[in-house]
Length: 292
Image (cartoon, rainbow, N blue to C red; front, side):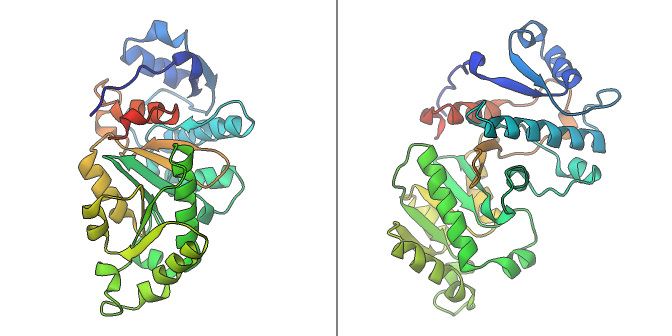
């Protein structure tokens, strides 16, 4: 892992409830630094700070803070948003429909949730996910060639935002061995095969569909298109544990979080590992040395 560059604090603005920012600064011994960093009070957090407690207040505050930052970015005040780990159960306790930051970005930017996708970056891999936080059965019921095409196009635009103008792309199959013809089912023949054909007709460099294991063993593509959550998350987290970035791509705002959860069992103890957040900040500031 390469050394992390020092973030340019003058270019970073913190969004969140004032008491939460102050509480975090106190735990980390950074009280003096907080006063020197630009910050915006966003998100309601009534009552006392309750580190590690999964409740509706924390969930609501997470969504409100991220929403305020996304709006500010849409208004041209910032170039991108880095969101810290969220807790989906806390957000659902607040009564907010939520299946990850891509769904929030879509709602705030007034686009369909099928227009915004997650791309994990880490361990030398970039993997965009056609479906994300849902059951395999639900994902299978809604995957279409059009959805695969949208995910691939969003992934290509994401690569371009990261400085790769003409990325080579490998499309994963739905079934093992991309169904090996139709030996293991007809899903690939009906969905990923026509999607790849259309993408190639657009003049894009697309290989596949192919088995995810074969594509990843080859490691010669700039971008991989996963069909399901685990197809993309497992390889990235295996190669880049607790250090990956998770970009929400497809809308007019580039948001990235991290590839891991919020570790509520150690919240408030000042021992959380910050590497993934720092690498994500560096990535969105254009530093590609953190990619491997």
